[in-house]
Amino acid sequence: MNTPPAIAATSVARPPLKSLDDALAQLLAHAAPLAGAQTVSTFDADGRVLAESVVSALQVPPEDNSSMDGYAVRSADVMQACAELRVSQRIAAGAAGVALEPGTVARIFTGAPIPAHADAVVMQEDCEILENKPGFVHIAAQPRLGQWIRRAGEDVMRGSMVLSKGERLTPAAIGLAASIGMNQLLVARKPRVALFSTGDELVMPGDVPPAEMRPGAIYNSNRFFLRAILLRMGCEVNDFGIVPDQREATLEALRSASASSDLILTSGGVSVGEEDHIKPAVQQLGSLDLWQIAIKPGKPFAYGKVGQAHFIGLPGNPVSSFVTFLVLVRPFLLKLQGATDVTPRPVAMTAHFDWPRADKRREFLRVRRNGSGGLDLFANQSSGVLTSAVWGDGIVDNPAGKSIQRGDVVQFIPFSEVI
Image (cartoon, rainbow, N blue to C red; front, side, top):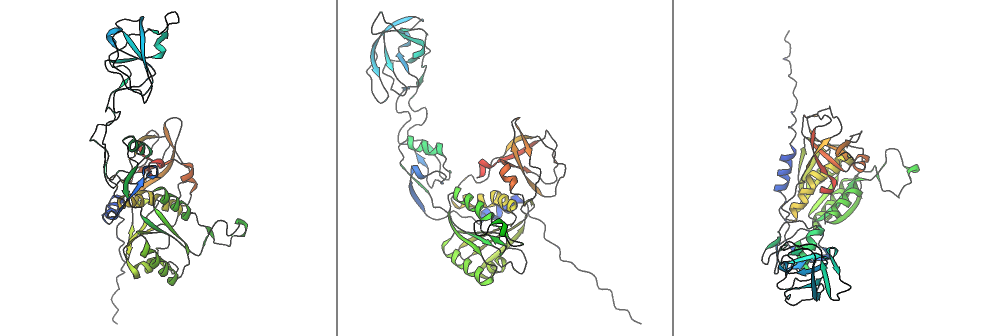
């Protein structure tokens, strides 16, 4: 009797996980800076990205001025302490004095221009007005040449570039622009972002009281923190709310968003479940790449195009969505605005905790700085525990396969650096 040949078992090999660095490089390669720029009031430029460099038409300070309330002197007239000199003039900020006569001093105030021939300022605490000798002052301290004088141009020289194209403006940068007379700045256009929430299990806070939540329902937290971060990054957010788990509703929302957005951002809904309609809808209208990234939390990630709009799908678990946004979406949005510095700068700090469970993936651990100059670890590092991102003030970027012992130096990224 002939026996049938054995049928060899076959399996489809999963593609290897993509490293975060490779995923970020591929993502940024798609992020061409948006066309167009706009002129805004310097008052309203916080967080915007400069579309052109700022060059100073003047020097700051415009002339030598006093950095202290006191008396402008010729140092040669005060060769020793206890000199008694006549006050020949009074110079307030915004006023101009005359050349200082030999053997006299000028009463001067902070920010006032230094009169010609004066070469030092003695602060008023080292001087005493002589009651028995009206109009004279007693100089109790011998000044150093140039003491308490801010030199013309020591902050900004005329013709120098003070802010660079592609720089994201901070409050200090706005103040610097104002100091050289810039009342308006040319900045990159705001990215227009369509925000989607998908899933029939999602409920908006306020729609249903906690005691009346149906089994399996959850409040939509991702929509709130993603919108908040997008607004902080200077994006225009079009919130499409919760899209029902229906193919036609998903297609219609994507069509509408693609016509008016630079980026469509979703969380969840890109797996292979029968009720996950985002993936096939994006593929029907455009293109989609699904990546499995070697990070924890946040392995699943999707990038594609719907028409001319970029599409990014984040994981559904809140901490996975939060971390993946910070390490991938944030740099992408900055690149769209033409920013030159898109990745955060970690700080070397000491771990005041043990993390013996080395993972095959690169980990982002939620931590908090303590009063001893080190980092404490949140006890529960689950991807569903959003409490960890509230308790913590940053994340440790821990390489794959690396355990941590108390006292080790780790790479800390404060949330203030990325949010």
